[in-house]
Image (cartoon, rainbow over all chains, first blue to last red; front, side, top):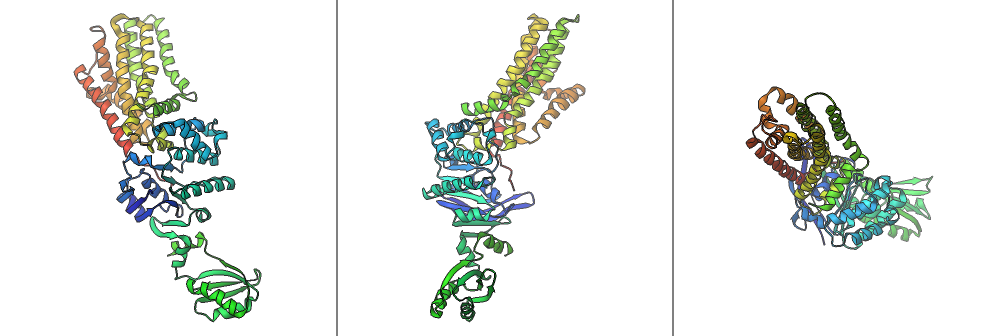
Length: 305
Length: 238
């Protein structure tokens, strides 16, 4: 049960504040670190992995300071964003070297296991300089996993991957999360985070904008209407019944989609009201889907606020 | 010493034909030595000039610069150093291993050719060949340590190293005699003088100053490089 704690951490570079008074705790399971480019995600990951000192505050792993503490690397596996990785080595040599540097008792066996985990045995004799971006990412993963760490930190791991490679890596990370490892990955692509992590930490302009389940975060933002797309057996009658209630701000009849676009003010009230109203009016609901509950909308709300 | 760090460093430094390129300068030294031997000039003067100016004054600092910075600066620049640093490995061990590789390479590519060049030009007379070889050994070690430190502390290590070797040692040292006291090249020359026959060589820096300075600079540069590597920060991608 490894826990990374970031306690009132700030980091500035000259006059530029990259991370501003951020506190968060990253525990077992998968956590997505989300934010636009330049938000401070890499700075945070560098501080969590001991490659950057906080200007203020503290970053600890299970209570131990991370900065200038080489022993934390027994627990941490790091997948950096940069691609350079001793291009003159083969995949096997690279992962084996990483196992040896960890001082593992049987580095050969550890390297073999790690390469099998990322399904890269077939290319292990090729130089890493000849690898595609996705292959490099997987070998980097193998090097990070070679010592079986309890914490895995990944900086923009899906960059440059094709959809198949992306799915494979997601599956792999899911497995690690289910195993009880602490997995944190950063991304500026909302779909990636949405598919993989229910728990997100949102960073905007160096500030910790939100933390928790992304759907709950969206619901907490009650000052904006929630949008739903609803298809029913009688859209007009349903619209009339719904607009009479205070939890609905506006309803649009979308002819092209043959659906209702509903703006709900009160999330809790609306989700209770809709099935009740439909049942009382004898209307069948075919589709009820949140139209804006993607991370993209959560994100733009957070940025706007 | 860490064998894996040493192996990675050697392959990074000498792999992909770099080793062949490093051979170019000592081959040039040997070619000049062979040509000088067949000339009618005074052999002693030729030996002092070629071994002192070309080898100790040019070959050793240039090789020290290329090798000293090459063992670490490239990894820091391209970010691959992260794979060494994200390990429970003492930073001093990484630095001393890389320094050992740098020193050994400098010795192979500078000290050995210096010995051969000395033997070609002047044989074993006055002990000049051996004396200059010892001078290149000690100065090669000091250059490696200083340039390795530059590789850790600045992204412009080659420029800073060239400024030291060319501007300070060669240019300023020629006009300001006091500058020679802070010259690795001159310290190496002092060591060479101590092992050459009496009166065969002259050196402006006393051996009593040169040896402590060589030791202090080499150890201090290594220790400082270890401290700086322990606090190395990765530049953000953002």
